[in-house]
Length: 181
Image 1 (cartoon, rainbow, N blue to C red):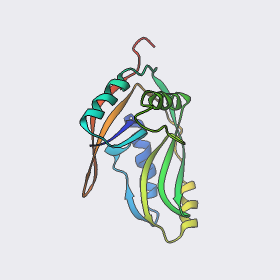
Image 2: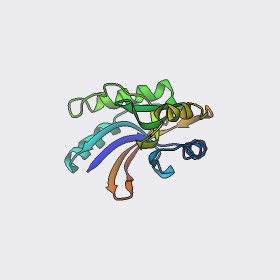
Image 3: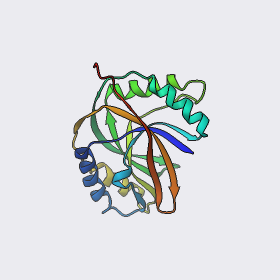
Image 4: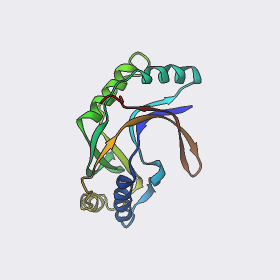
């Protein structure tokens, strides 16, 4: 089963991202805007793993202690591959996010490699082709994201089933912050 660890977002954040995606949709590109119900921030991608390993991962993730996180939307940006735009993302800021990701890495050490360069972001579109790369890049930087602050009280172990119309995500287990925080 294809599995990853992620956080999701409150409605106010989803609405802000929807506005950005609407503006993005007016740009000329071939690709796909992320469905609102699929918006998430991946803390760690585990890939294809079997049920036995999933049970081990669940047990290790249950041991992670963390407090409710105060996070904030940041700037919009692009990941390029061979100078071609590939991913449009929105940065998610918050020291606690990076601390949680590190705790996950430590908990799963020996089973999965540590993240080499984690950047808290949510993917809002995947780009296949853009004719005017410079113009597209400039237009992306003109989209302004409200720096909304929001709380995050949990992370999730997620399953991803790849379907012809795109991935379908389902929650395998949710892990909540310490109630004593």
